[in-house]
Image (cartoon, rainbow, N blue to C red; front, side, top):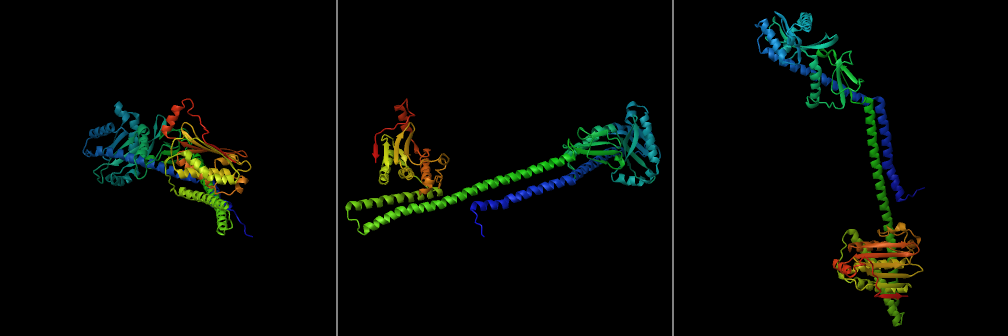
Length: 580
């Protein structure tokens, strides 16, 4: 059994398959995907990997900065040949370097022939041998006596020849607290086999906290290096001593809590006692994941809403197109009927006259008159169709000339009088002959009035009275056509000026018509700079009022002649007729 579907139902089915079904699948798939992301912690893994890379950059940048300081100190010592210098000269060199470089807590020089020469900032400023200096000398002497150091001397000289350095971190007691102090050292030329000269510095921990790491953080944000630039505004990085998480040395931003997400030992050598940690600012990774999921879901929802709105707009547009197609089909059917009726009458009366069946001269005149009137009716219908076609194509042109509006209305009514008389209509006409000339298209205005009269005639039943009045007010000429027909429902009053539209009233549907008359009337009146108004009640009748603007001179003249009632409407009875 073959199921027949209306175009609208077919359209809904197509849109259901093409749009609604994919939307539902997209929502379900996205929801499952987001749930899987959350359950498998994929976002967590991505963020942790990025955090770990950031911490690696911190370590790398910190090591590079140690190299910069080592190079500065190396240049200072290498500028003087210390192999033949006295101990006092070496001490002066050490003290001078300590004064020049604020990053150093202590500066030392080691010669395997004369031992260690060292001074620290406290002793330099107090000019006494402080306990801190004694501790540092002992640590250095112990370091340079170890087998590991002697085994690495050859490598140290090779590194120094390439501009490299060595650094270690040593735990030291300071103010009853154990802290890690970084020793940076490098070999000095000449690189002889038996002669070993080493210089270096101990990094000042106060400088490390207040200047060293903050500068590293700033450089990571402002100085791109091998793609290592990072935006640290949304994260907090903290560096602390191993096993002392509360003893934070430095942080990229103020710390709001100590629950960091990712941490790592900064490495071996100088950083072996240091730990770096990172977390999102004000949020956990789970919070970021939920934020991402929420925004992703909102984005999908927005896309779905846009698709639905687009679908509804398209459905509405297609529905209008389908309705328009139906109206056009009805139009063709109605026009065919409208054409058949006058053509049939013309053919019938013409054949009767041709066969000489009518002998009376008066009857023959009546037949000729009927043929002429039906021809005019046919011409009006064809003109409506042609004008509509020109309007649709944007080719409708009007020929404006100075015309007598009262004369045009009277002439048009007279041409339609016979039809109304034959149908039993009574026509009441009131025309103000004092109207000034207006710039009009004579044929267009006549066509508009004929269409309104034809409308009144077609939709009147028992009360066959039509009133036409031509009057004016201060600024406008008014043409009023009123009937006592079936009336127009309020819901249809705004639509009846649309092309092909016919009200849903069963009495209207039973009356054949093209649905173009009122649409053409509105277009004609708007082209003349005017408006058309409708007042109607079902079962009482309809009243169409055409407003056409008067020339400025006429309006001013009227205002001067009627100073107290310039806005009132005059309805003179210069020309009244009643036709039964």
